[in-house]
Image (spheres, helix red, strand yellow):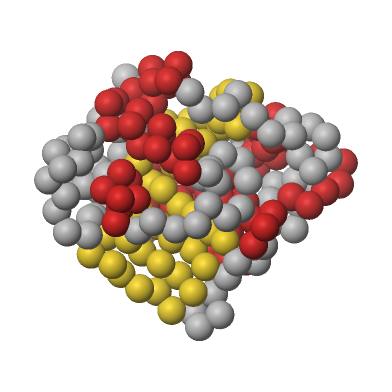
Length: 247
């Protein structure tokens, strides 16, 4: 049975509920939602914080890294005392303090084919990873499971977002075939902390829109953000009839 909002929750999320696009129905959809966040770096920290505080009922956090000092400027759930701890466990502790109504599950492991069942039972998946192989696998699993995917990336002062709805839009594989780029990491190229937080928070916005069914989503579109010029751009993707996943 779907959960109904308690009186306490209705008061807590009142500023959401008074929005006509959200109302009680929309907030109850969030309370009953399960979102999987893959990658607990800067993107995952920002997205998880926003989703937990906004009233999403269940989050599954998947990552295999431990916290290091250089993570702290942009991974805002963590502090000095967390260095050396698994990211998923430290994030769970902080999120539980933020909102005790949110059920937090953790998977301390790299993404693999074995996680297909987890993705099948999610309402939305957020790809917050930082390497191409993981992104390809997450895209494949989401299309196999028919689960909406919100992909984010950030490097230097630049960010990008991609929303994929299996059966409705093209997939991350279509985008990657058209926009090839050097395989640089944040270690090599650097990353400005506010930019990664902007992109991660935007991923949470898209995820909540998917769950509530409100607003317009940029399907078949690559969204890019320039943190130095403060400009957003949209890049429409042509239909890719040769994609082996979504066509």
